[in-house]
Each structure stands twice: as structure tokens, then as C-alpha cells.
Length: 416
Ligand code: ATP
Ligand code: MG
Image (cartoon, rainbow, N blue to C red; front, side):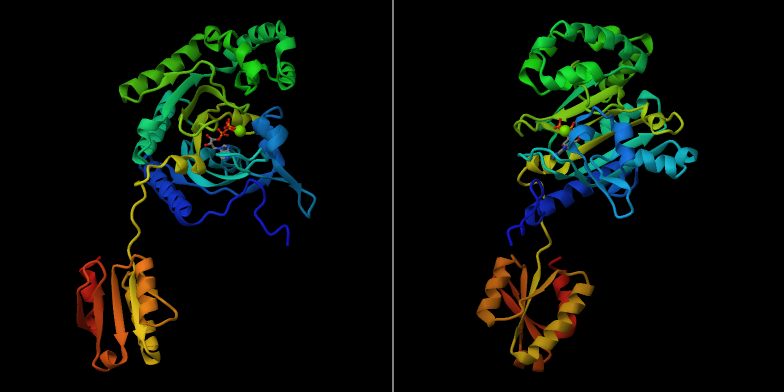
């Protein structure tokens, strides 16, 4: 069957990759909970409106990347391309305004119809944090500190750079938009087709263009910071002061804009030069306008997300904690099978990882124990069992000894 293969841009996750994902997710969970965040899991699909109202009709995600379908009931649904909109929807539909400020973390698959390449998939996985209902810059500082702590815990501190910018408040951006339109209009013939569209609908997006020609023009474009009002300047100052106080290094990048419509003030990315073109591993920012855009009461918000595929690609080779090594049970003869099944269950209940080769003679089963990197083998021969004992073999040292069946678990405790 020709179609019996994964859909382009999707992957099966198993073995080392699965262990890496679990390790990153567990480290993330620990760090996020230390910062007082609570877990949230929102549905993998939402009404399409949840995303196109919030991310902006002109964003790449809405205009060309969403997996949207009509379900059997005639509703337009979309597989989530990111976490923030779903969490904001949960905040509003769940009446969580009463509980604000709310600090959430979550993780799981996201879906975007992109051109698959290294570090860019159609189903990928994110870890995500959000703080809702905190307009103060302390939230920005804490979320950045949390990101830095996580990357440090994963051993990635020396491989990433925090790039930081502020998009100011809406008033500052309005003032800036005029200057930007004037500048790019004077160079319209040199803009890419996409950016000519952006010029009409959302000129700030041009700053985020990946087109070479656009990027040349962007170099000399006016700077948003020159149009900041006092409130925007003060806010950004408070954020950088906080980072300085916490010794969190950052690089100011006045060209950094985020791809989605709802951002204001702080915008940031942790980038690396070790992943080729897909160098952004963790990205986020403040989105104070989002809740109103969704039809809810004005509620400040800030968050970030990081891709598990890109993070796992960066993990140092020795980062993953070792798995607990199994105990191999090796029954010899048919009657020993039943005794082995019983002992395996007892040992597993006592917390041991137990493997029982399902077939083969002693030699075959010993080979399997070796392949699994078992710490111990428990040999269960029929005449031994008749005497109520088994032979425990230390596979690292080669030594072996007879142990009474009822004290096997106690004996194995020495090897935990
Ligand atoms: P890019 O500019 O690379 O397309 P983005 O701005 O679309 O990134 P975000 O929406 O900020 O990305 O997503 C946050 C993080 O999720 C990214 O930094 C990256 O680690 C990861 N990510 C985003 N899209 C993909 C994808 N298609 N495949 C794998 N990881 C992704
Ligand atoms: Mg993208």
C-alpha cells in the first residue's frame, strides 16, 4: 500500500528521540512548577475563529499554514498551530478572570502546513508557558528567567543567545507605522511580492521577511524605538534592568519582530548558530491586546514556546539520564516458566525492571540479557527450583551465587 508511510512533515517518535522528548518535558515541568505555573492541556483542535481572530489574517500561520477542516457537523475546526490562542480561549470560556493572575504551562503537538526541512515539521511539539493578567514588567522578567533556567538545566546555556526587543505599545506602533510605510513606499519596486502585500496590510511584518532583497531594505528602515512614547520606554527599561539584576545576558535586536499580530512590548528569541537556518529554539513575547481581540475583557498576557525537535537536536550527548538497567529472568525448562512468571511479577511489583526472554535456550537468553545491558541474570533451573533456590549472576563482574527464592527481592535491593 503506497500510502502506508508517515504523512510528509510528520515523524514517529521512539527510542532515543522519545527519551529526549521525555527528559526535556520533565525538566521543563520541574522548572515551570518552581515558578508557580500550573499545568493546562487544551484541546488539540479549536474553532477556526480562535486562531484567525487572534493570530491575524495576514500572519504566515493563518494565511498559509493552518490545518483547517470542516467536521461532520459542519463546523470549521483547526488543528492548533500554537498554544497561546487556545489558552486565552480557555481563560475566557472557563471564567478564569476571577482567578487572575494565572500562570500556566503545557506541552504537546502543534500543526503547521510548512515546507518540511531540518527543524521544521508539519507536526511538531512545543513546551509553552503563559502568564495571564499581569501587566507589570516583573512577569516579563520572570518568564525570561524561567527560560534561561530551563536552558541551563538542559545544558544549553552556552549554546544560545537571548535576543531581545520591544515592540512598544499600540500608540508607539501607530506612530512608527506611518514612518515605515513612507520608507518602504519609496522602495516599493525592490520589495518582494509578499512584502508589497504586507506594505498595504501590515507593514511591520516586512521587518520579519525572510526574502534577501527585503532584508537589505530592512537594514536602513526607521527604528521603532525612535517612535516610543514614555510608557514604552519605561517598560522596556524596567525589563532590561530586571535582566541585568539577575545577570541574564541578552543582545538587543531592534529588528526582532514576532510573526503574530497580537504582540506588544517585550519580544524575544533564544537563538543558536548550531541548527542552520532553523536557529530559533525558544520564542515569545507580551500580548496585552489578545484577550480584547478575542472579545474578552482587556487582560495582559505574556508567554513563550520552544520546539522539542530543535531543543532535542541541541542536547549534549551525555544529557540523558541513564535508564534503570533490567534484571533478566532466565528459566530453563518448561516448569521453570511458570515460576519465572511469578517471580517476574513479584519483582516488578517491588519496583524492578524485569525482562523475560520469551523463548530460546540458555545461551540465547543470556545473549538477550547482554543486549539489554541487564545488570543481573536470575537463572531458574528445574533442579534448583526443586531446592527452592535460583542462581543470581552479576553480569558486570561475572560472579554468581545461589539465593533462596523467597529472598530474591531483598538480594536484588543491593543493586538498585
Ligand atoms: P520560524 O520563524 O522559525 O517559522 P515561528 O516564529 O513560526 O518560527 P513560533 O511560532 O514562535 O515560531 O514557535 C516557537 C518555537 O516553536 C520555535 O522557536 C521553534 O522552536 C518551534 N517551531 C515553530 N514552528 C516549527 C516547525 N514547523 N517545526 C518545528 N519546530 C517549530
Ligand atoms: Mg513559522
